[in-house]
Length: 372
Image 1 (cartoon, one colour):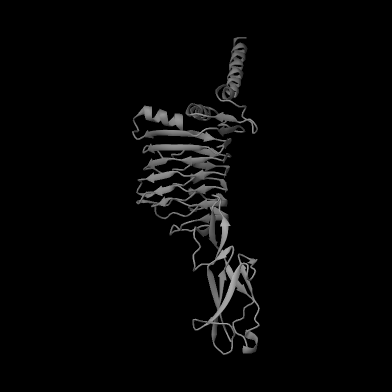
Image 2 (spheres, helix red, strand yellow; image 1 turned 180 degrees about the vertical axis):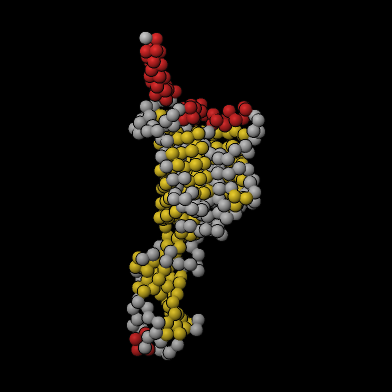
């Protein structure tokens, strides 16, 4: 009888605790945690509540929706491994693991943190099967450890980051591989970026192996970048790909652009604020809603290597850019030179150069030679 009663009491307590945990979100944060009525985070106190519930729970916000409704600034340091107060403050400000949907609501989460005690410094330590969207992150992370990230240190499972801008500055003093990323330090699963912009800074003259968006991956992982832009304010780390340092995984790029090469792995498409004259480019609107000039594959099809003089003035050809046929007079103009001099009619044998010059939504020029 006593054993049965004890089991009943334990089961009753567990039910009560489970119910209390299930309602704690709504008791502490406004909203109901659904897609249409997410839990609202409107202050630093609300952020700490959000962190506490994630760090102390067993579901880490799985299936729940959260929205940042005001700009929030998080500041702190953890520079002494024996300082329990610093460690406790870190645990109160950094989400240990998150499995839900976090909507930044277009607001800015400013994260200013100095950490020299542990790897992995970011607003979210781990994201697992999570969605982070409509969030702006700013501030400065200073560290001598690995895997700093503008949003998360580690990404596990299948995660989506969309409509986000990272203006974070990562100031690394580590000597060697840093594995820092403008958004995520370490991808350990499938990570999808959609319509995201990095315009912050990756600093550290002695630090190597970082990524504009993702610092590192592991074997079998996939990172995809669609409608994304790497437009850093400053980069001083070395061996830094524009988007992801692919050590073992695979990355794909669809309308992924970068404004400056890194001298290591220039992933995506190079774009320019001002159209260069020596490169044929097309005008595009990048994910930051600004117009740029993008490199691409320019080609002349149908142009022969040699013509009879009687045929040279009636040659036909098509001009293509990234597989799209361009229109003469609208997208480009054509001219012919011989020995550097412009000619309007081909009357003698020799080597000629056909020059295509962009106009309208195209700029720059390229050329091909032919014989007559």
